[in-house]
Length: 193
Image (cartoon, rainbow, N blue to C red):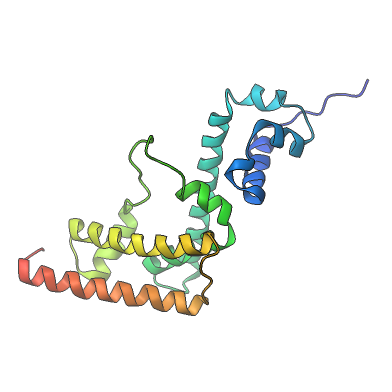
């Protein structure tokens, strides 16, 4: 009798991510995953209590993949760090559209408050240094900038828009400069700092 092939938890997650990558979130079910892994559903449910648990692990892994895109773009030095994070977010949407949709375009009405829009300490410091804005103003600046970047990324992920990277770069710079000028003028008038 041939020994049973053991399917690892990591292989299950990798297979699930590949299913989403190829067929979108709806492709992620036990039957499709078992077929892709060439096994029964037993290894899936031996490693995960439910498909929802697996889905949440997949979302966490996809989030880490997106963060790797951002880290690589920032470290490349092609753009200033804050702009690089936006460019990477858009690049992730273009190159990994289905993964982007699962991570950023799913219904979150039943989830705890989203942390995607939060400005991390390092980026907050970079943004404050480059704009001269204080903490609350920098967070609002980031919210407006993130909404713009997310819009472009969503259009890339859905195939609605396909722009040259130089155009995307210019658009981000234009909005960044416009917001910087607008919020700077408001702060001068209202004494924000």
